[in-house]
Amino acid sequence: MSTDIAKAFVKHFQTDVHIEYQRMGSKLRNTVRSKGGIVGATTTFQSVGKGTASTKARHGKVPVMNVEHDAIECQLYDYYAGDWVDKLDEIKTNQDERMVVARAGAYALGRKTDELIIDALGTATIQSGDDSDELTKDKVLEAFEKLGDADVPDDGQRYAVIGWKQWSDLLATQEFANADYVGNDELPWKGTQAKRWLGTLWMPHSGLPKTGSVRTCFWYHKTAIGHASGHEVKSDVTWHGDRAAFFINNMMSQGACLIDNTGVVFMECLES
Image (cartoon, rainbow, N blue to C red):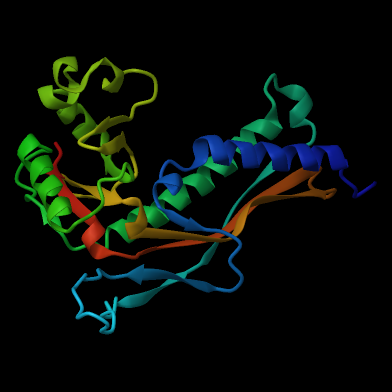
């Protein structure tokens, strides 16, 4: 029996996994600072502090800001998501078994990407409110103030990721969901469940950490979190004659880290 696999099958499968990962796999990767093509087990992200402008005497030397630079190390880890596809199953089902497994692998790796980013967000130390109540307008405005006091840029690159219960809480807040406050173009129920409010793109996510009845949500600037990829999502398809099946392995090498603690505010919300 031949141990070769049709090249077209492999090529199409790898394309399917890549497309599904890009389309539905990760919700947060595009919301953080990302580096690709990393060679090695670690990489570094540069963090630059604030400079101060000052005067100088005529013909005097221009004062040096002495801006602080920090190199933040980001560790990369290898992840795999594999499964079997029986050769004869493909002719017994009405669905594209290749696409089913491709999507499952892409979604699994996408969830892992988001998990890495959420774990990095979880190392932040600036908190808004406490865990005694739900996600309220007061808690949101306190976080808004803390980001502003820290000079976090209001440049369209702020993101807030919250749980689905907190999304429901905000839908009951007039300032978030009422067209009289935000305008028709910013209503959250149009198309994808995400909307812009307070200069921030808000989105619900099911993977946020929950301890007991408390869910932790995050409001951050894109440059505050780093994501690194040493090996983008790839697939390997191998025919196993003794099993009469293809083993399909999806893999990637990625990591995430906190670059700037002042660019992240977390909100602990009571969730029944």
